[in-house]
Each structure stands twice: as C-alpha cells, then as structure tokens.
Length: 327
Ligand code: PBG
Image (tube, rainbow, N blue to C red):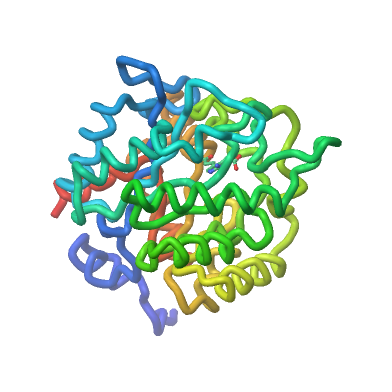
C-alpha cells in the first residue's frame, strides 16, 4: 500500500495550528454596524423580520454607538426613518431632519473613535419609496435626483459624517457629491460608493426597517443580478468620479463580484451583508436548522475571504463581542 505524499490534514490537527495557518480573520475594526434611527418614538422598536435589530431612539442609538467604540468596531452606518415623507424627500435635506440630527448626536458621542457613516439616498424620505425623484410619468429622474443628493451630502457632512454612502445607484452620483463637498469646503469627507449594488430580493426586511413606501422595484437603477462584467464598469466609473472606497452589495450571493472588485480596486473594498442575509440565518437558527453562532461567523469569514476589507453586518456588535471574549 502506498502512503499519501501530501498531508494537508497535518495543519488542521489542533486549534492552535488552525489558528496559526488561517488565511483570513475577522477583526472588530473591519466590521461596520448599520443602524436605524426612527423619528418620533420613545422606545426602541424591534423589527419583526430582523430579530435582534431595532429602530433606535436618539438615546438607544447613542448607547449603540458608545458600545461600538468599546467593542472596537470600525464604523457605524446610519439610516433615518422620518415621521413624514413627500415626493422629493425634503426631510433628507433638512438640517433638523431625523438622519442629520442623528449624525450630529452620534458624532458628539463617539468623536473620532468610530467612523461615522451615513446613507445618502432618498428612498427613506420619499412618499413613493424610490431612491430618486420622479418625472411626471413616474420614471426615476437621474439628473434631478443628483442635485438633491449633492445637498444631502453637504448637510450630512456638516452634521458630522466622516464618510458618506451614496446608495441610490444614480449615474454620476459620486462626482456630484464630491464636487458639492469640495465647493462647501468639506474636502476631508470621504465617499464610500455603493459601486456595485444589485437589485435584490434580499433587501426585503430592510424595507420594513425603514418603513418603505415602495411599490414595484428598483430594476431601472440597481444592477441586474445576471451581470458580473458590468460591476467592473460601475467600480471604474466611481473611482474616476472620486470614490475613496467602493462597496459590493448584497454580499453572500455576490462573492464573485467581491473577489473581482478586490482584485482590481486600488481603494478599500466593503461588502454589505444585507437584511435578507441576516434574516435567513436568524430564521434557520430559530428553527434549530443551523447552529447560529458558527453560521454567522462562517458567513462573514466567507465575505472576508472573497476579498472584502470591511463588512457591513447587522451582527457587527455581537460578532465583536464573541471575538473579544475568545481573545
Ligand atoms: C437604499 C438602501 C437599501 C439598503 C441600504 N440602502 C435598500 C434598497 O436598496 O432597497 C438595503 C440594506 C439591507 O437590505 O440591509 N437607501
């Protein structure tokens, strides 16, 4: 009988060997916590489709941000849920609007100990739920939307955001935001471009989280899940327009895109493990069908292995707690 000449199992024999030879790790500083702030509530409101995630009050958001600092997270990404909406999303450009106030509150709480990021998009603020304003015949008007994004970006940066995350997939959004920031003297505010953002069924629970008014879909502006090469075009355009970092979203069904972007991007690459990815694992775990903690860790490790430098995940704080305990 002949013996195997190669024995990869040698390095799997003990936890210590496995730890030494792990090719990627998750570090708390690479995790970004997405968080929702809702106007006009006095208690945090749990989300049915995302067990463990809430719409925050100002106080609970500040506590979450403080905890994020203690855990050594990399950042927090803020989304606002306004009490009133209109056709142009005017609450988004109101300095006293829910998101802009939350940015200021969180920044006052964490200073420079946590990167404060905010969503630059209209869907949370419009009464039709689209990421842009509409033409009279109901199409999403790219260029009219850009003007509003530019104003939103300046107000968010003035409120204290370190990094802006334009997520609406309007053509040219990074360029107008960069230009508006520079003209307003906000040259140090960075842009994390949602470069390759796909239209996805996995955004479902997020729509509950922001109380979305959308009927229909976002297929005329978000990318077609069939397209891989097109992600390169989106990333290249955003880089040309001045993106400081680029994002792929969703993550788990798009690991090929994460790997492609990681291979070509000269700037840091983020991936967003979105609401439906969270909900799937939580639901399966709640049914006893999968083991929750290892499933969560494996899912985020896979996104890191594909090449993401940082991961937005609703489990950021919980993962950070686990990793802190195990170190
Ligand atoms: C748009 C935006 C969405 C998400 C983040 N930013 C919703 C969408 O594009 O429909 C989804 C995030 C998630 O599902 O966790 N402002």
